[in-house]
Length: 194
Length: 266
Image (cartoon, rainbow over all chains, first blue to last red; front, side, top):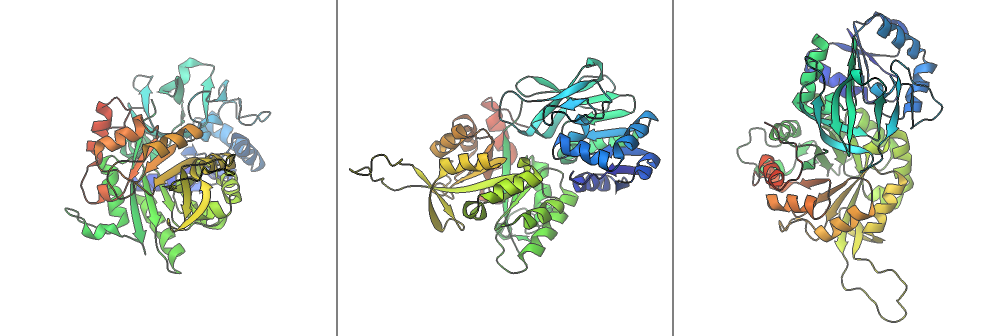
């Protein structure tokens, strides 16, 4: 069973619909026990970095998430769910992220903000889950990891940024695979089966 | 590089696509879900559903439609048409729509934009503007100092003039928290003579959020012009795609040949 973390703001319906279309079972939950028991965990995200982190902490989900990640459970972070893995974000100064990875989340300095639409994903790791293609993005902020080795994909929005990261059991993407047509569904399928 | 978007618009009434009844070579003409799937396969980047239902059943039918589309189509879609409250927005987004577009209600109560974008994020709130070129402006003595403007905002499906400057309104909508502007030229709508590039350019220069050009598309080059000359981020058309007069892929190839970044599928 895949646990989709329901912290009260993320539009989890789209992710659930996509998995259902693929014939993959999932359950929306905000119960730390269920998250720890899940075979896989997805953290989707819409809203602000601060709201996400505060909601996770209030519900005791931050600890459950870290434990789940540390014991090797496959994790997928989507959009804000990717940003939450880092130390902090310019969006919500003073609020700590999960800090799984070193680095911070920064705002786009050029172009229209938010970036809305389809942009090209360029895989940066051989044999990774990511394939070249177009993904749907809606983001004002992006992750700037301190370790370049975790970057699995790059996208150009007035300069390259990390649109995907992968390290051991952790996969995270800035775009929305659940809204990226067949390309996105294929990626979700590969992740659920890897 | 971020690509420019091509967006088919589907007018729905009582849960069915209205213009769909005259479709040719289409198996499930009036069913919004089947049409949405077809457009997805043809390379549409997003979809817009404009609900023109007038009955008291309106809300139930649109929420049901959103739920059905969201279960089958995995590209973003926007729902508009008579949406007037945060509760309605909440219901439509929870059913699976990615964005809602606000028109008349936003003009009557601009605070709705702020309230909704604060609650659901700017990315979910599109402000739709129906603009019409003003007839000859009065620049006579005594009128100087008043700022003349070229395009006026209309509401209630284009029936009611508001006295608002469309460019100024777009700027206000952005400052209230709108995530995108859906800009329809009433003068060009239905003419197939191309988008109103002047209007488009004015609005895209005035705001720093994406602008969707709408009204007037007749051929592939019109879309290319909306992007290259009008500065639009996306372009929308309804009947053109409905009646198979123009394929989305043809439009995209034409734009791509002119060096405009497009997501070309297959």
